[in-house]
Amino acid sequence: MAPDFEVEEKGLTVETADRIGTFVREKGHPLTLLEKLKQEGTLDESKRLDKVVFDLSLARGLDYYTGVIFEAVFKGGVEVGSIAAGGRYDNLIGMFGSKQGPAVGVSLGIERVFAIMEQQQKDQNQAIIMLDI
Image (cartoon, rainbow, N blue to C red; front, side, top):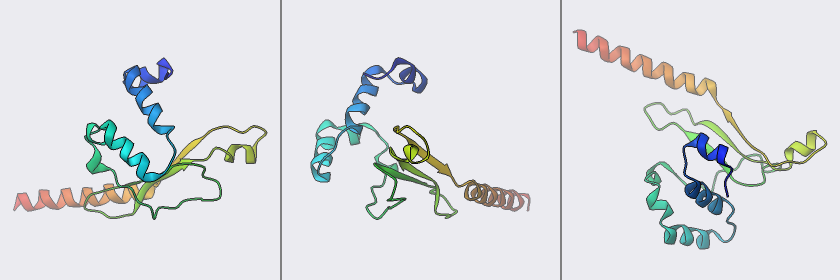
């Protein structure tokens, strides 16, 4: 069962949090897991399937990541590559300290985010100038 403080903070019901917890602990053959997700209706219920891409070519820090890795890519007029990335690295903390502990980390490419913002501002200014003519 999910801790109540996390459920409240994220605005989830306990049932939803528990269901997510069940899925993130799943391990096994990719096709078996995909079939299970389809049977549960999880992919369709999310209504965000068009926002998610499963990319087997994605590789990041293979020497210390111990689980899922992820990347966030801006889908707009400006192509800058990933703007955020990270993953699970359960053993990394123990490499630098005295205790092992589970961990997930993410980094944000702030310069890439600024590049997107600058281009959007230029596009907006250009649209305003064109309307003034």
